[in-house]
Length: 195
Image 1 (tube, rainbow, N blue to C red):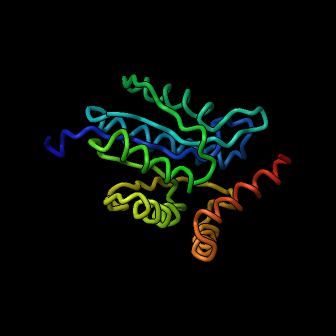
Image 2 (cartoon, rainbow, N blue to C red):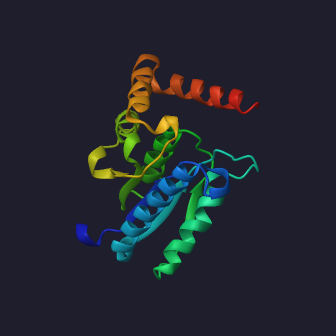
């Protein structure tokens, strides 16, 4: 198959749910920018869409996952461009580390004849790059992260959305190891949410 005809696995990392009433206005504007950028890229490559999959299992105060609220919004935006497709969801992953592991494993086992593209927040690009390299090595996958990870710019005032916060996150992952860091991150989130 000619590379220019290769189908694409479009995988987008959700950053919270799509519900402007629950977000700060700046976060909503930024998330809107992120979703628009993703939809515009899918539109430009619409003849190569193989699969669209989104990840995000963190729940909001109404117990809805990121995917539950983001999927209908993406479908609406894609439909307005004449693109009708079934968006698959990964509602199990609640951290970037879990998403990267799931993305690589799913591509390897189900879609390895597709070109994989993972869409992430630009400020989290280096974090995703670091985690990607770890799991690619662990699973014996020979993909170049810079050919796969697509950073999308957006404005965001969330404290975890700074490059400084993400640099600290990488430092902690190097110290603890990615799996241990993930366990601690999940526990901290659960404690914060009272679970």
